[in-house]
Length: 450
Image (tube, rainbow, N blue to C red; front, side):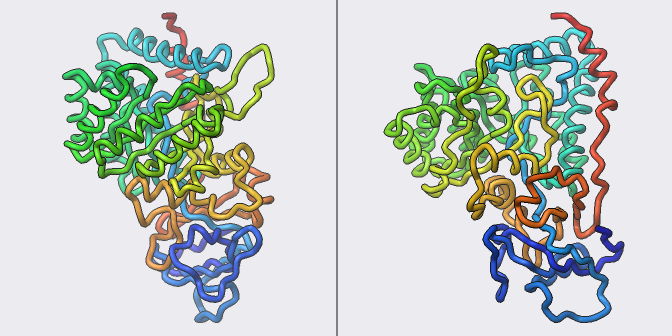
C-alpha cells in the first residue's frame, strides 16, 4: 500500500469495524463480521468524507484501493509497565511464577541501585532509554495513547515520574502518555503518601496501587480515594491478580467508590480471581462494579503466562477475568499489553493488534466479533479522557492503521507486519527499534549480583 505524499486523497474499498465508526454511514451494510465496506476521503490530515464503497466521487483526487483490507483507528493501550520493561536478558524469571516475577523485578531495581550508586542520572538514563524504547514500539505498531504504571516504592523509583514527565513532553503530538503510581496502598496512609499524591498532581498523573486483602484495606482505599478526590485525579488499581477465590479486593474498591461518591474514572486491572469464585460470590462483585461505574481491563497475555503456573504440571485455567459477564452488565471493558519482556512476561512488543488477536483467542471474543474492537480503541479512549480518539469519523484526525487482512480470519492469522500507520493522514515509519540498542544496559546491570 503506497499512500500518496499529498494532503488530499481517498482510501477506497476499506473494511472498517462498524463499532469504531463515530456515526452511522447511510447505505453501508455490515457483513457477518460486523465490518462495513467504505471509501474515506482525507484532506489536510482530517477525514472529510465517508461513503459506502463505490459511491460517486469527484475525479482527479489521488486514491488507494485497499482491496477490502481493514482500516482501524489507532490503538490505545491503557495498561502497561514501561519503566520496568525490556530487562529480560539481564533479569529473568527463573520459573515463570508470579512470586518469582515480583522477586526478580525487585532484584532488577536493586541491581540498578547498586550499579548506579551515587549517580542518579545514570539510573534515570537506564529507565529513560527502556521507557522510550517501549514508546517507540507502541508508536511504530499504531498506538496513539499509552497508560503506564510507574513503580514508586523507593526514592529512586519515584524519580521515574520525572522520566515520565520528560517523555510526555517529548512525545507530545505523537503519543499521549499517562502515568499511574504503582505501590502498596498502605503507603498512602503515611505523610510520604500525601507528598506523592501532590507530585502526581504536579506531573498530571493518576493515583493507583496494588490492592491486597487485609484488615486495613478499606482504610487504605478511603485514604487514596480522598487524596485523589481532593486533587481531581483519576484512579487505577491492580486488583486480585491471583487464583485465590478469597481475593475480593475489587468488591472493596467498588464499595469505596460508592462511599466516597467519587466523580472521576476508576479503572481496575486484572481481576483474575473472579474466574475461580463461586457464581454467587462473583455476581455480587460484578453488580457492585456496575453500580460504582468502574471500568475493567483484562491483561490476557501476561495473565495467561503467569496464572496457574506450576513448573511440574500443565496449567488448568487461562488467568483472565469475567470480561463477557462484565460487558453484559454495561461495565466498560478493555484489553491491554501489560508487561513486555520483563520478569512478569517474557514476550510482547506493545502491539495493539497482537493484544486484540491474543485476547480474541484467549477470551473468545469472536463468533460474533460484535463491538469487541472497541476494547482496544474507543473504550480506553473514553476512559482515558480522549473522547475523539479510537474512532473513525468525519471531522476526526486521520490517525489510522491499514491492514491487508480482510476478514478477521485473515487479520488475526498473521502478524500484519506490512501494516501502514497513518498519523494525521501521513504514513509513518513502522520499523520498531532494534533490541541491540539496549545491549549496553543489559550487560552493565546484568553482571551485578544482589
